[in-house]
Structure formats: C-alpha cells, structure tokens
Image (cartoon, rainbow, N blue to C red):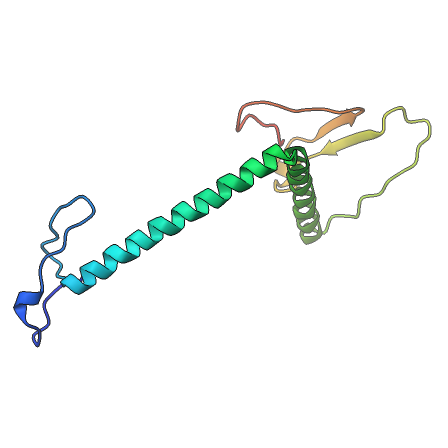
Length: 150
C-alpha cells in the first residue's frame, strides 16, 4: 500500500485497503493487482507453515517411537555443560585467572572437593564463595531465580 495516489495514475484503480481485521486503512491506497499478490503471498506462507509443521510433527513422532529421546536429552545436557565450561574458561582467561590444576591426593576421601568457588560472571568482591564436595550424583532443583547458580 502507498500513502498517496501518484499524480500520473488513474484515480479509479486505487482504493483504500483493509487490515487483517477488516478495518479500512484511510491513509493508504492499493490496487486490485497488489491486493491479489498480497493474498497469494499470505496463502503461500500459510501453506509453507503447514508443510513445515507436518514434517516437524513426523520427525518428533519418529524420534519418540524409535527411542532417541534419551540420547537427545543427554546430548543437550552435555552441550549445556560444555558451553558453560567454555564461557567460564573464556571469562577466566579475560580476567587473567590462573589455570586450574588437578592434584592427586590418595588420602582424600571425596573425588570432587571445591573450595571457595563463585560464579564466573560475577566479580569476586561482589560474591560469596562456596565450598562443597561432590561424591555421587546430585540433582539441584529450586524455583527460578532462587540462587541455584550461586
């Protein structure tokens, strides 16, 4: 749609289009040819959307029926963990932190002991360090924004 009728155009071929709710747009003009092209475009978009939805529904059904969901879930969790580690490492490098080291202490009873750690995206002066030991499998659950990451 255009805002005004061109001076060279025949006034009879232009009219005010209607919006998707049927309301006449008094500040715009269009022609039958443009209006028809727009209708065909919208119909093509709806057809493409339906086709994509159909393909995605079939894909989702196949993934469920063939038992691929556990592998997809595990891959997405692995991706989340690795991307978090990569962001942590990038930020640590930017801040000039030292490289972490692994110490073999045969007398230590717990495989994962962390002392005074804080979220990589926070300044150390603004955070509280956490010390904890991981020995087994843990699932941390809580409401959003409740401090699970700190």
